Amino acid sequence: MWVEIKQAQSLMVAEMWKEFFEGEGIPTRILPTSGEPIGRELTAYRVLVPSDKEHITEEVLRKL
Image (cartoon, rainbow, N blue to C red; front, top):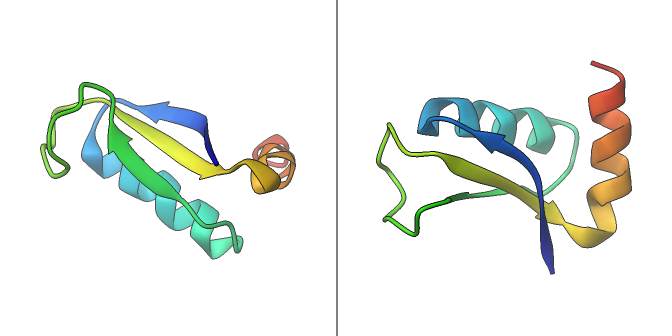
């Protein structure tokens, strides 16, 4: 199961978070909040991580 860890206001910001978390070894998905197809730049996105990695993600965010 995947849980939302962040929301981003654009695809570029969502991809930056995805790259950051994956650089820390945390699998990450991004999905538009509106249900529109992925790839639209000016759509809000949800940044998702596996539920068993949520505590690790929160720890990484605290260190920022």
